[in-house]
Amino acid sequence: MDPASGGGAPEVNAGVLLAVSPAASAEALTAFARALMEDVRPEMERATGARWVFDMVDSYQLSDDDARRPSDFLDEASLHMVEGPYDVLLVITDVGLVSRKQRVVPGLASEISRIAVLSTRKLLVSPRGRPVRRLDEEPVRHNATALGLHLLGRLLGLPPGREGGGVMAPFRFEEEGRAPPRFSPGEEARLRARAARIPERTEPAHGAASTVAFHLRSAARHLGPVLRPLWRNRALLLPLSLPGLATAAVAPVFILVFTAEIWDVGLNMPPSTAATFAVISILAATWYLLRVQNLFFPQKEQRILTEHLAALNVTVLLTMLLAMIGLFLLVGLLILFIQFFIFPAGLIATWPTLEDPRVTLLDRFVLAAFISTNGVLTGALAGGLESRSLIRHLALFDEVS
Image (cartoon, rainbow, N blue to C red):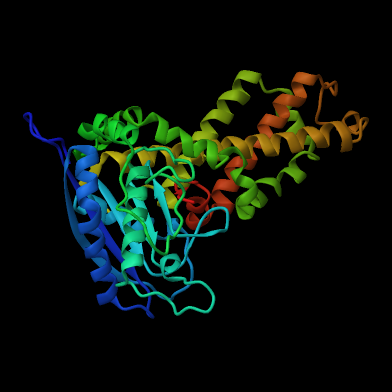
């Protein structure tokens, strides 16, 4: 929400969403969540200088108790975030939480979306020979408070700390003697400096132009959180993780590169035309996949949009754009390899459709770009992608340990 006007302290609205497996008790998880809200509120208010209002948003039933990735909660969490609207949203679940490094972790936080996921599964695991912990035990409550504060700190942009470094240190369950967790003076100073920017700005839906402008303003205000996932997710290499897309793009080029007509077109195409065709095709393929696969958040029509979800949409768009550029480069390099090392050197002179069979280095690159552009369009239209596959490769969430 917009920062409070006047000289008063800003108000931060935090939503808590429960994702409950069939084997868990919704009542017990609700009581755990309410206790967690009460425990983290005083420290968050002290450290930020803002008034924190926690709200139990809703609970929904999971289909099974299998471990999940944080992206599996994004659709539901983003929908409730704009319905609030909320400045931050914490998802609490009893199922295991798997990071992009295939590790089972107690929690994950996404600064760009202001959404965090806390799993009680790791909190309840006890040493060998001891009974499984319960949610209402004091050690579980104390450690959950430390974990909750760590996740909220990550949502607000605090970097991870070192071992023994307080709230932002890597989370470790402590059986006894955990003191009430507190942010360090340096962390508190950073949080207070950002307090006025914690409340979300929102934008009513007033047409495409205002929506685009709001997305651009939001991305500019949070440039670091927008760009960091692009580095982590290696978007240029994303096509290698999407076999359907890559196969649909690569399959037709093996035919095109050995076809006389494609050489005829490529050798008579100006480089500027090939470049323009490539740029337009990459942009069109990017937008097509974003819209067809419904990759923007929230994935249901809403009358308003929060600032961080707008910035998240920009990250998704840039990831998809870089993926299409990566696909273009992948196919282009494959075509160049075929041209230089596999294509028979004297074969082109036997094709009667070519008036001048001489091929320069520039001609080869233009032809490779032209065929690669066709591959990108074919991949987007015929191969597509699974939205879940893409979201899981966005690297939006940071591990807490």
